[in-house]
Length: 619
Image (cartoon, helix red, strand yellow):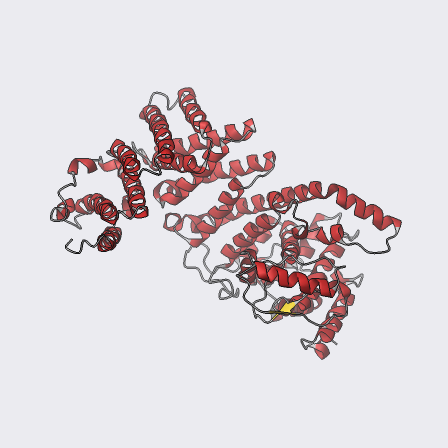
């Protein structure tokens, strides 16, 4: 019967999905699908990757439903509402079925059968991401008339320049709750309400299955989990911009956090998952519906916060399991891989988001685990991970909740201590990252007294550390606190000198001179000075900054025997380069791998462009 109505006409779509709804409502729907005997059978998990022919043989009713839903999700807005409603109601029906909801094993086995639907959702990640980038249209509630919808669409489109596809109204469908609009674009965007419903189904499925089964499911897309060049089949990577399935799965988790963020959704009625119930104004309601509506209206904020709490718990549990299961991939190439970037972005998003205290404590424990077990990524790989993490932790030290403030300070100390133990360097990665992060936080904050408190607490922690208090680490923390206090004072002065570029540059130069022996910090401040000079169109001075950066890199290249003359190659250009400025110990450069011939040439090109703008063609 379904095959007799395979067209895209709304009437045929309606009949087709009405048939599937009747099938899903059958009281023995689960036995019809012949659940697999053992959810821990890896061969069985392999067959649950997608809606394959083998899946059709074993679980035909669900295969039929998933096949239709997969096709309809890429259709017009009106058509895909049928698929979303079908899947939502099916999951609700199973969740509240008294025959299964009291038995965890039964629920595990039932929800395992929905793993192909997780694959289908993940395949559409690229459309979801486009919808999240400012192009999500908040649709009117179900009771709104079609003429009102047309007006709201025109107003919405006029306010969103990115939405370039032309919109057109469509004929009124069979079901009044599908009174929406469509457009001619092939990649139609999703409303926030639809995205939240899809993510709710995604979270319901992954939270109802055993973690070991979930990890086996994700790994089943990888031919070699330990390899960074793993191939992923049969997942369609073209649809998700060449992301592997584990990376796309992490992106789905992050998107769920964003969609259910209580601070974002609270107070925005249209983007709330209960928006339809809250805003609908039917003319006739019986007493039970009135009571229910009144309850929703009175407890909406509390329900939103509880929902966000549950979402956070699910995601924290999953990133912990993904880290332990894909640790080799995450740490490959010292973290310079897309899997690590996706994993780390969730941690940063959580640090930037206001979450309940118990969620924050759970998250801090995961960060401690990451710092302890993946030291090489933070302290030997790219500086961006350690630097970004330090920025967010320093911001949390300003929290009014004493427990969160204390935990953030302890985490900063753990990072410093772990780095010192890992590298044994005098000026190690975290030391430099803390200094750079403090300067960034001061730039972004109007009040920064909390940074002085954080530095004081670091000193108290090292004094109470029986192992470290008599080591070089103690003197290093003392030096760090002094440098940070100096930078805070000078950064405050930067704001006062914004209208006086010469004095501003002098202030930056004083910081640069204080970092003799720490080339990474010298380079950072030279780059800042170059940006200031460029902003004020002092292109010749900016070019000289890039020349000094190149000279600093040249010292490393000379030591590597790549550039025999070192900084002396710049003597014909300027006599102002003082070799004493770049005197540093061998162990001071923690990011020496970034000082390559390519970065040297890159800075030479920047200098050349600035000289051209300054019309100093002779150089």
